[in-house]
Structures are given as structure tokens and as C-alpha cells.
Amino acid sequence: MFLTLKNEEIIVNPEKALGNRHLRNVIIQRMGSFTSAPRIPNDDTQDADVRLPERMSRDELLERCRRELRGLPALVKRAFHRAGRQFADAAPGGLRLLHWNVLSKGCDEAVSSPNNIRVLQWNLLSQALGQMNDNFVCCPDEALEWKTRRFLIVEEIIEYSPDVICLQEVDHFSFLKTILATQGYEGMFFPKPDSPCLYIKDNNGPDGCAIFYRKDKFELLKAETRVLEVWRVQSNQVAIAALLRVRETGRELCVATTHLKARSGALLAALRHEQGKDLLGFVAACCGGRPAVLCGDFNAEPSEPVYRTLLGDQRLRLASACTLLRGDGREPPYTTWKVREEGEVCHTIDYVFYASDAFAVDAVLRFPTGDDIGEGRVPSFAYPSDHFSLVCDLRFADSQATLS
Image (cartoon, rainbow, N blue to C red; front, side):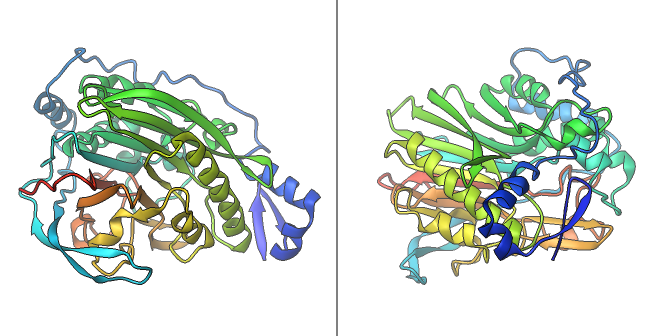
């Protein structure tokens, strides 16, 4: 098969490549960015024009977003499906599935109990990559401009009142940190060591992963970062883990996020699998026996080995929250839906995994339909990323469910 790396085309036999240590190391070291071009390092300063008070109510911030977005279509709206109390028949592997029987009254409906945690997972779409590299042929240029997208991103996050926020392709962390601080969030950021954004003119610094959490609900015990390894060689993908304690109850959990290597093909699937194994070791070490929530853009469909390895790890005992949307143990049909020069891309590569022996899933945000998002798919004026956010209400399994 042909694999394009660093603007070169090389012929690779995947099995031979994986068995050749020198070739493996060359491939891993070169699976990062556009290194045939000069780096263009820029600081994260493009949002210096944004002025906000230190604290704002949620309604005040949403109103500010709508003022900034006046004249543009409304953000795509979605609703939650809430789990019923009864169990369906056991699915393959012994996982019990809850029936969906309640549709939440509003998109922003959240459970404030200390035993419940609302998690938002989202690949934001790096500004430099989205505007200059990703070739979204159906998206108007104006919809890709940062000053159009940034308050749409804020509105999507704030709309759902999450307790924990896991983000990828973050290249405007200072903006998000400033905005989310008005709502009582604290955050951390870890950039890719060789971010592809740094090879694009007018970038806003490297992209990476970020985690935010509500300071009034959680105490941060420690935060760890890792550059993921493949066959003991550092790759260009990263992970963050935050050990949190619920202030009211003292319960502890570990929240982690990552963004695995993109592109399709047997070799890239093998690299993702190795990254996933390294990720599991990192998260297990950070958890120290505490329950984990692992979110991210894994760039892997459920058919890939890394998906099965993640769910099969006996240390973390993970399950996938969004499988409950379909009621049969399968993932939703898509978490990203875009149109590029090579055609329409619609598949599932983003996940919220949770410790199945410690948490139950009370609700999951539904994905918009094709009619909801329009023929041009996303990004668009009505949605700022090519990935949809995943929002899940988790509950400590030994506590009582709270239903509206």
C-alpha cells in the first residue's frame, strides 16, 4: 500500500514494516507533522481582543455568545435520552443495557448531585488545520474563521453545563481558559511535541489536549501528562490524566483524554493499537485503583484492534457510554460527518469510556440527524467542528439514580 508521510510517498508492506525495528522507528519518528516545511512558532495571542468580567452567570455568557453570533444561524440543538430504571436483556459479553424511556426536557438539563458527573468530550477542530489544511469543500470560508467559530464553541460547551470537559485539537487554550474561568472551571493543557499547526502560517501555537473541571465540585489531587509511545519510541500524540476528588463526598476518580494518530490503513491501525496499549498503562498508573473516565478522539472505528483492547483491559474495566444510545451494545453510527475533496466521511471515532464497575450511565446526548445539520455537513455556520460533542451523565453505581 502507499502511505504519505512528511509529503513523501513510500511503499510500505505493513507486516514487513512492523517487523523491521529500524523501519518501525523511522515511521514512528516521522508520524508527526509537516517537517519538510519550516516551523512557524507563534504564541497563543489571537484572542487578546476578548474582554470579560472575572465571573459571569451561565445565562450572561450564553447571551454574550448570541450577541457575538448575531446574524448567523442558530447552533444545532440536541436533546438527552435518559436511562430508565429497568434492565434489558444481557448483551454479548454480559453487559447489561438500560432501556431508554425518557427524553429530557431541555438540552441544558443537568443533575447537580455530587454522585453524578456530566462529562463533555469534543474534538474542537484546530483552527490552523481546519482553515488551511482539512479541505472542507462544503463549508463556507467565513464559517471557518476563528472569530466566527470561537463563540459557537463556547456556546456548545456551556449549553450542556458539564462538570468535566475533555478536548482535543485545542490551539486557543488561553481563550478557553479565560472564558471557562468565568463559569468556575480550572483547566490544563498539553501540546503535541511536533504539532502540525506549527507548520501553517498564522497559527496560534501548537494544538494539543485539554481538561477542564468545576472547581466548586472537584479538588485536583494531581495531573499527569504523557507523550504516547509506540514500541518504546515517543510518537506525536499525547494524553492528560487528572485525579479528582469530589469535594462533598470525598470520592475520587481519574479523568483522562487523548487524541490518537489519524489516517486509515493497516499500518496506522497498528500504530494506534500500540498507542492505545501505552495509554492504558499510563491511565492505570495514574488511577492507582480509582475508577477511570477515558475520553478522546481515538481515530479508530469500533472494528479496530485498539477499540477491543481498550474495552478488554482488566485493570480499568472500561465500557463505552454512547453504546447505550442504540440499546444493543453498538456505537452510534457517527461522531464525525464531513465532506472533503475525496468525498463524504461519516464514521465513529470519538468515545467516552468509563469504569463499568464503578459508574452507571444515566443519560447521553443524542447526535443530530443529517436533516439537522444540512447537506454540507460540518463544520458550518451552525456547528463549529467536524466532530460532534459527546455528553454523558455518569453516576457512581452505588448511589441512587436521579431521574427528572
